Amino acid sequence: MSRTCTICGKNSGRGNHVSHANNKTKRVLHPNLQTVRALVGGAAQRLRVCTRCLRSGKVTKAA
Image 1 (cartoon, rainbow, N blue to C red):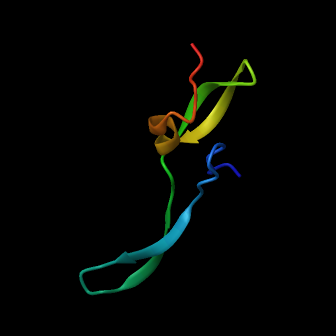
Image 2: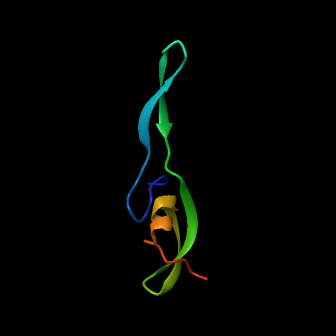
């Protein structure tokens, strides 16, 4: 649960590193998560939120 957005639930994806010789090895694609003090139910709480949720206004930051 640590690398998951608390708002939208976005988490790590899987893929391949591909070299010039077309060799493929497994890799993990992590979302861009930021720790933010946000208002939840009128109180400030620390959340790990992806930058897309921050940019789209789904999170109201606490002062």
